[in-house]
Image (cartoon, rainbow, N blue to C red; front, side, top):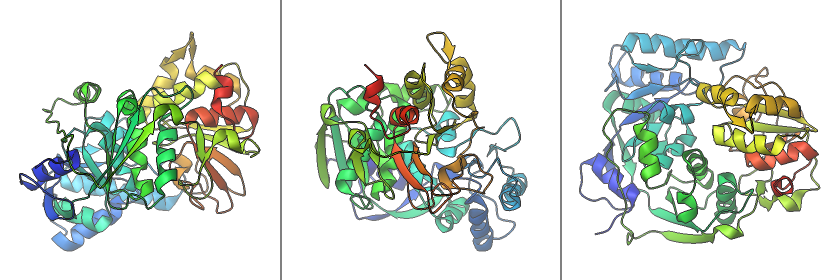
Amino acid sequence: MASTITEYILAKAAGSKKVDPGENIWVSADVLLTHDVCGPGTIGVFEREFGKTARVWDKDKVVIIPDHYIYTADEKSHRNIDTLRQFVKEQGLKWFYDPGTNSYKGVCHLALPQEGHVRPGEVIFGTDSHTCSHGALGAFATGIGNTDAGFIMGTGKLLIKVPPTMRFRIDGELPAGVMAKDIILRIIGDIGVDGANYCAMEFTGSAIKSLNIDERMTICNMAIEAGAKNGIIEPDEMTLKYVASRTQKPLFPVYGDKDAKVLKEMTYKASDLVPCVAEPHLPSKYAPASERSDVKIDRAYIGSCTGGKITDFITAARILRGQKVKVDTYLVPATVEIAEALITEEIDGKSLVSIFAEAGCLDIAPPSCAACLGGPVDTFGHAHGSEVIISTTNRNFIGRMGSKKASIFLASPATVAASAIKGQITDPREFLS
């Protein structure tokens, strides 16, 4: 009987020929990811349940990437990282990307694939809801809590329910100014923040296949904003080339059957998509950017796992070149690799950093999650009052960027850059003529 890609991956991880939606199965983990916010809690669960002298199930499969509260004077944040360092030392773990050292990488959702830990057909669990990003490379990837992570740390397995699949097909050529963020915000706007509860959101169609890996990760990252268990895109030649350039391990990609039964299928014409925003305080509050031009902004923010990739900065720079921003514009590369690329990447002979500087953007922050999750009060980009912010981040909940009084509009890097120039929400197509 036909199966979806998610079902095939889970069947393989469970040692079964086939699994069905709703079935409870034990699956083996290929990667367990944690970071500085949830890592100490995961370690606490592991040591409580398995003992202080217990060893992790597989030292090669535990990956710890501190990234959330890094550049701060906050003592509690430092204590969390110290806890990770001590655990890594005791366990002899190989994959620890330590802040303050040359091994530090930045945001876990981009550092994990950059460092070759994400491979198609594998199962990735992470103590962060946006772990679903890695479905962009054809993996089953999902966020879990500290208790489940502590159990995996000791056993390498987890009992999960097989999710039904919702398929989203986007066909055609994307219009100028439309990015992956506009695709996923439109979908979430249509189905709501609970529209895919405990489902696999599978993205397919010619428009999806035309996207580069950066853009695919943006789409899968925000599957959780519709309540999904995971987001996934079948691997293709682009996927395999990207992964093979990052790891020497053998690849075993998995593919779904075209005639596999799905819970629901929704089809979009790429030509119908437009630059958009999600209004405060939910990612589902969709509105075309052109219809919100009366909204004045106090701040523009380009960064995070959905807006701090090199594709995002190149797109923003193309709009900002030769322009001046009217509001404080924050730039936060997601990883060290991306921060370095801002210096080497050029548009018509000018580096991205120089384009941003000439446009009047603030100094580029060191790579981290920065203000995406709020963080300590000295976090770069932290909102302190009733600012109206347009941001490339993935959530606009109350208090998400630091202040409960702030209003956050989510948008693509193109829309954020255009809005920064005019000081109000702006359709980026105004600058693409």
